[in-house]
Every structure is written in C-alpha cells, then in structure tokens.
Image (cartoon, rainbow, N blue to C red; front, top):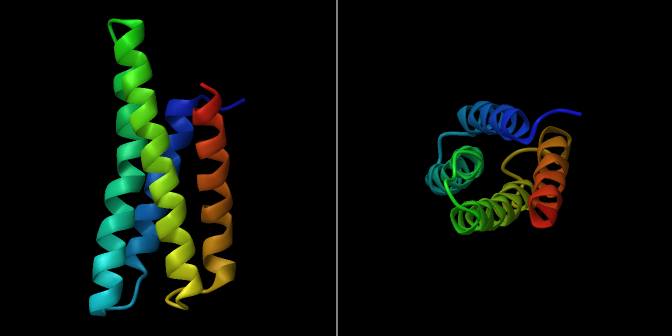
Length: 107
C-alpha cells in the first residue's frame, strides 16, 4: 500500500498538470487557482502532521488536510460539471480526491 504522504504528493502533481491544461479564461483562472491551492495543501498538511510533536498537533494538521481534500473534491467536480474539462479527464482525479478524503477522515 502506498504511503499517504507519497499518495498526496502524486495527487498534487496530477492537479498541477490538470491546472496547466485549463483553457485561458477568467473562469479557469479562478477555479484553477482555487483547486491548485487546496490540492497542494492536502499533502503539505499531511507532511506537517507526520512531523507533529504532539497528538493534538497531529489531529489538527490532519483535520486541515481533510478539509482541503473536501474542498479539492468540490472544485474538481465544479470544473468537470461546468464543462471546462471533460469527465474523461477529470473523473480519475475526482475519484482520487474522494479516496484521499475518505482515508484522511479515518486517520
């Protein structure tokens, strides 16, 4: 099984590539910025949680990671449903966001 920190890192890389593929429009710029911020924050907070010096800090950072995963899942669905990128392009990312969200929620 892939380690959570590595999985969230690879997910962030995939989102970066997806954002770079967005068309050059105002809507894409706004949504791209939002999803890029939240998706990269997931892994950053997981990394911080793994380096936590207390159980309280670990829980706090993992809680933030869950919130960011939920937000990322939302933005990806919005980009897909607005027709900015196709379902074929986004469904694998949406599924991965959902799985990460579920894993983090149980952590």
